[in-house]
Amino acid sequence: MSEPVKQPKQPKVINKAGTLKMTDEVAATRQPKDIGGRRIERRSSRRDRVRADVAPKEYDDIVISVDRVSRTVAGGRRMRFKALVAIGNRKNKVGVAVAKGNDVTTAVQKATEKAKKHLLTFHMDGETICHEVEIKVAGAKVLLKPAAPGTGVIAGGVVRSIIGLTGVKNLISKSLGSANKVNIAYAVLEGLRQQVPRKKWNTTTVKAEKTEKTKKTTATESTKPTKKEPKS
Image (cartoon, rainbow, N blue to C red; front, side, top):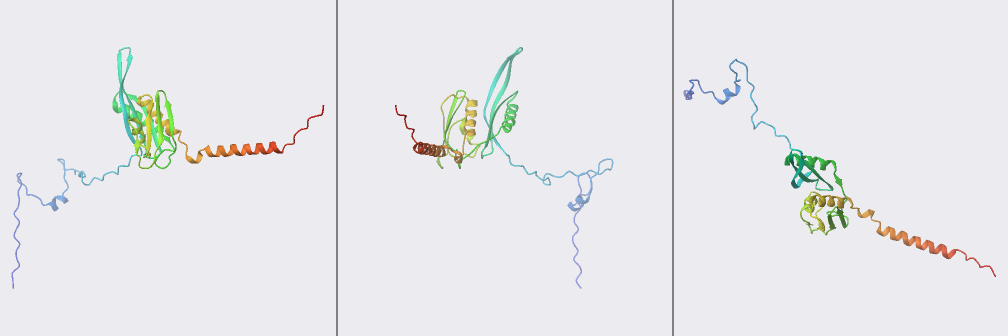
């Protein structure tokens, strides 16, 4: 009969401290303890941490401009920052606000919260605006015109920043007045507010009503009997 094969003994590994080195299986079953003999709970490793699902942002925001403003007080000049922020949902909602703060971060946060409270919902015709509009706010004068598909947004500066946060993909614009960014931003907002959908246009209906009224008046006048003048 063949003798059973003896497995070679694994050499004992001794650490520098003079203790035997444990295998991974044994180390997994051991519970670490502190000096007083109390069990120490193991902290979860980074791999075991469940990453929280980051919710998508409801509104995209953009800082159009940040200016440093000063105010003269009894002790001297008081320096602050003014931020112009626009937010939008890439569809038909947009908001613009201006706020001040002691630092840039505070001013931007204030302006963002203010813009969320004053959101504007406007009408669209596909991927462009409904009709041409010209708006004047203070010294700023802005012209907005609808464009054919594939034209893109032909605008510059503040207008492009605000329109980029909406669902408008085709637009032609021109700034005809002052270059004040705050006034231009509010002019663009007012232009979007004035958009009327095509269904509510009254040009054809008003003309038809006028023609019907004129026809009725002429018909009634023709049917009325003429009064005979008394003989002298």
